[in-house]
Picture 1 (cartoon, one colour):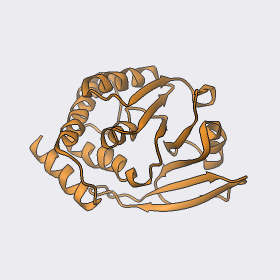
Picture 2 (cartoon, one colour):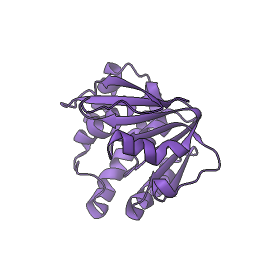
Picture 3 (spheres, one colour):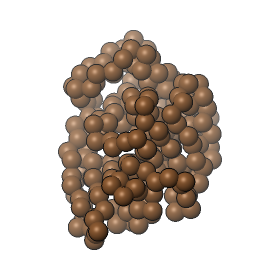
Picture 4 (spheres, one colour):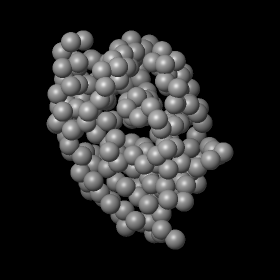
Length: 205
């Protein structure tokens, strides 16, 4: 794990993110849990810990500066990405991790328990059926559909000044959206040889 720890430290330095040692320990423990459960649960196509540092941890933490709090929901969290790394980084914010796959939400629940995260709740449901008691300041998701469809499925979750952050690969096919202001933020993820960007969407009147 020492080389993984060094890779994480190096990557965070490149991202200009400073993080306390106990959070580093939690992040590495999360990777170990992912690797262990992946064998039985098939949570992620990434099989080894070294690759998970860049493709999971650093990829998630690269979007940390753009999170708007205090209430965040991660739609289609899968194995808890980007939600769990972000919740470790921001213990003062409240995170809801939503996914319709029971196997994956079981893993996320277990990870939250083992990592001692007090600021995370899990919801096993479909996004269009989810009705929160209070709306969210940030809705974040890996781009699982076209942006108009993502907006249609998630806009009922946004607070009045809330933002939608869609994590994408290349910054192509970003359409003009009706009643929404869209901006594209290029993201460089250390140790990941692929283009990344964040599409930030804010509803307008």
